[in-house]
Length: 126
Picture (tube, rainbow, N blue to C red):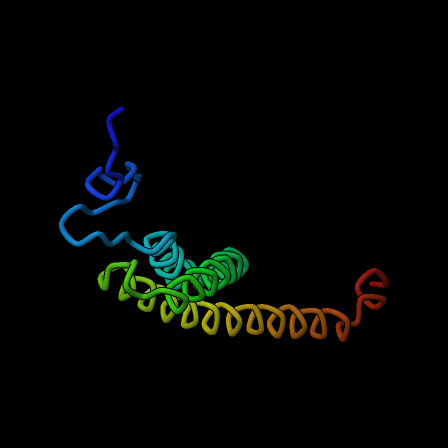
């Protein structure tokens, strides 16, 4: 029988395998960057959508950072840089959207206080 040498065989095909360096991009690095940018861009829309995108981006970034810290030689440097940039963008987007949510709450509280101080009983007694 013929012996098979498993060391000379090609590695199993992987979706993200880079044959030149043998490194893969970090999972969700592009999604984190996209969601971080969206959280900055949409923070002026009452802040709710941006808060959601920013929180999702931070959760995905933390999961990918754990993978990178466990074995940094398996992942490309460019995907790690995209992950860091997306994480920073999501933190900025979260801060801006939180300020926008606070602003909207203050405006509605001010308008509610202004309407409650109006003499509504006097308007119907002409």
